[in-house]
Length: 131
Image (cartoon, rainbow, N blue to C red; front, top):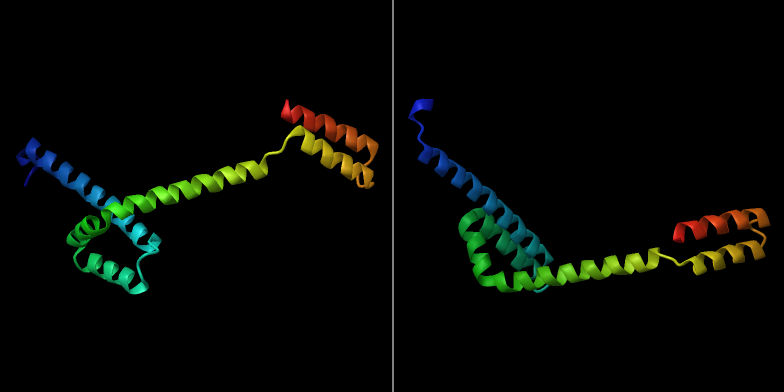
């Protein structure tokens, strides 16, 4: 087939197949993540789903989506909520107020870890960071 024999319909179908392939790959990857994220499946159940998807790729993914598609969404939402809570906890633990910083500096000064000069310099720096 020469370049002159390729029609726009052939190009459209090729692009459609190519997009479909990447769509299927994205769905298959999300199914694999869901299989291994699922706590209600035993090890044998997970192995069975993986074998089915490897033996019959398109049909295996479609069967999984039909059988476990609803709970797949619930697990994804639950994982997103856990990630959000973990991020919020991290932000709360990482952030500090100027009062906390000054209290820590005063404690270091009282214990003799830092001098008065260092205390004043660090106090000015802490206040400038929170301003």
